[in-house]
Length: 186
Length: 192
Image 1 (cartoon, one colour):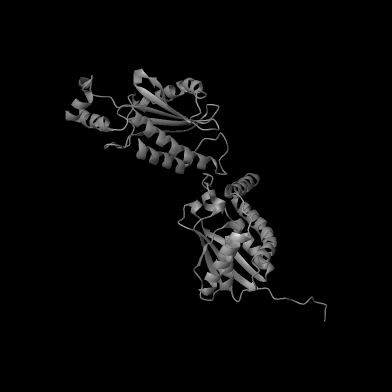
Image 2: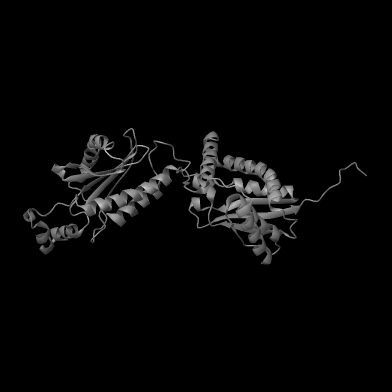
């Protein structure tokens, strides 16, 4: 599972972004997206294209956590959103790792755990990971915990007197805490 | 030791009964804004910002001592060690609800350190990431001025400065306070 997390200001200016991989079930915390390294901007395209859905969904109920709101099937990218009362948007793109081609179908995760070799370890990691199924309630819950923890740290960061509203968040402390939250929950 | 425990009892008692409280975040954000504004006004000249903060503190301290004595109703300290306990256990307790540790005395009892385990002024703060603030700015420098101003009004000339700050990545926040001299009461020159 690979994640791309970004914070957008109320006027859609990116304030912060980070890419990381799962640390659950033996994951090493390194993001492995399906795009080649030269096409990482695809993550930004996909995540920003979900903003319309976010804006539609944000007035539907009073929750700050909007759960899984958008999917981009060609890259099997799933997007979860969280809103802060001041209008900042936290968006998390998650992308399950590519399963080996011969394991497509219902038994995919089972055969994955029996496979040996390079493909085996990644699909075994995904099979028992919280996020093996990006729309499952466990995943929603894990993402919620992650968002809440990031939100707490976000509040502390924007309370710093040297931070001006709408400025990019450069704080290495904040980055470290987001990484830690990712390691803890995702 | 007994003077320290006595002082801490006085501090606790005053904190509970005589002190008006305000929201800690109000204090933190107000002070943070002042420092950030100073940094902007002096265009990132952090030495000048330190100096201004010290001066502001000095002016606060000169008045604050009056309030302190009125609230606490304590008498003159017998020696500088007792003064240190008063500052830490009563002064900081009633104005900031913290009690920094008094330690690292020199053998002549004229210098000590205050170690701040917590510092309400610096909650949420991260110093600007410009490569200089971390080495030059003493964010809570106003406290040095407060001590200098307050003690000057009770006949003690002191010098106070920070030697480390957790905001800079140090392990502790430490302020060094040294007694320069007791200011003697002097007769006006032409009264004889």
